[in-house]
Length: 130
Image 1: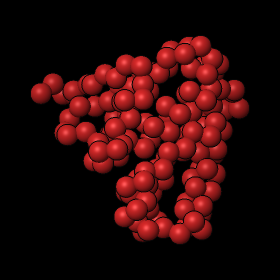
Image 2 (image 1 turned 180 degrees about the vertical axis):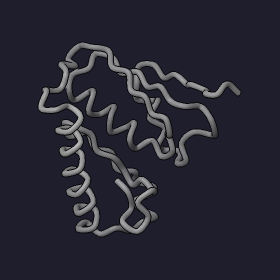
Image 3 (image 1 turned 120 degrees about the vertical axis):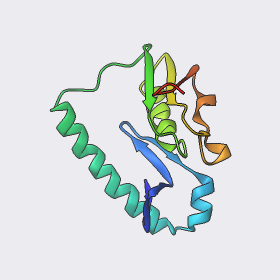
């Protein structure tokens, strides 16, 4: 979910099944109205549904109840996408949630947005090797 006048700045993220994360730090800086935020969420929800239909081709979501789920985020900036994915996996009943993130750079931009504290086991990847 990008800030309307700067779409690359993530104010949050959504995931299939209702996983939502809104970054309070970005929202405070952006000073969005409820209408502005709702418009972005509605537009991105439609895009999410379009992609689900296209990529899955009408097949149902795999059953996650009791299963271990590995979430991979290649660009953990604000952590919003990872948090929404974690919430969605938990909402679908995942038994364990494991987060893999790229370790290049300093990690999340905003201190409160470090999603790896919300998973069973975080891993860091470095590619190419440092």
